[in-house]
Amino acid sequence: MKIAFVVQRYGENIVGGAEYFTRLVAERMSQYHEIEVLTTCATDYHFWKNEYPEGLDMLNGIRIHRFMNASKRNPKKHNKIQDAVYYSAHSINDEISWINEQGPNCPKLIEYISQKQDKYDCFVFFTFRYYPSYYGIKEVDNKSLIVPFAENDPALDLTTTREIFEASKGIIYCTPEEKRLIERKVDIATGIKSDIIGCGIEIPEIIISNTEPGDLKYVLYIGRIEGSKGCYQLFEYYLRLINEYPDLPTLFLAGLDAIEIPKNDKIKYLGFISEDEKYSLLSGAEFLIMPSPYESFSLVTLEAMACKTPVLANGECDVLKGHCLRSNAGLWYQNYEEFRECFRFLCSNEQVKTKMGENGKKYVRQNYSWDIIEKKYLELFTLFDPVQKQTIG
Image 1: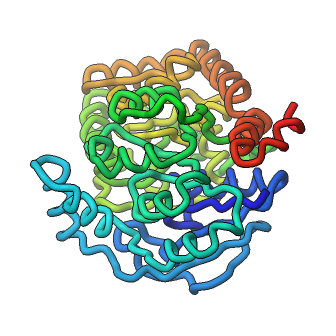
Image 2: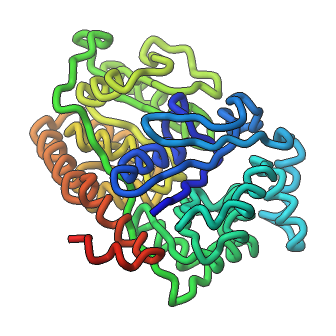
């Protein structure tokens, strides 16, 4: 089969989030089917500025078709339209205006899908809330799967969102929590095929120790450092905590800094890190902190568990809390007092923390090994090529 993965950004330097997830799945599934990626020339998700050259590209054996965006996002205009469709009475045209401004506004990509749809047996659209998914699924509804990456926000209440799910032939959920959320918010037709799949987690067999921390004990945050990821609250809670208990571990931060990190000797910003550095830091951390209230999967949470590192998560996020509950490898908090007690508990109970680490590794192995993920994807692909079903064990 020839399958198109449609995603808003795609590239080696785009790490984390739905785009990195897409790349991992594309590269794994290319051993079974011919996978091509249809995407834009953007690397930045705030403005969708064209930075990659338009045309054909290759990355790790995957053929990539890149298309120029027609315009950059205007943040002020986008926020104004979004507030109107999220929180006020509005029309379907208002929602379409939001999609157009949400972007990436790439008519060339949609035109290619429309004209070349017979070349592909199936189109898999990654992330429901962007322009390519809304317009692309309308062109190929009977040949489409959607991987929503849904979070609990007002975008799920929109009529245009319901149109996306109604037009899709199948839905690939990342977690049970995401499935329940979408089924509660969107009226999913009973005939639509779906499965809870997620992504394979694979860590190096040998993890090289990082000399950066030395003998320093630390807790770790990896990801975009911004308000929507809960980082303002993290800084507030952590600074309050070390004021009460100065001897607690240092907070290490790695990733894109989109806000001002507080100046404090107990907070250390590492910037961007390599994959090797990531696994080394995860393995050496007391625990991973995940303060985000909005997640649809969280690769880094599962990578930490695979490294036998416990997780302290924001309990306002059902997905993160669900990972902790099912794995018995993490704790969660919903206010400062709970944050303080969980933090101190993980720092002072090595035996419990070791058991949590073992639980986390087992959880990832049983649910997110690549052979499990690949088999589930192959099963859904038989919707478009039933003959393949006979080859799946």
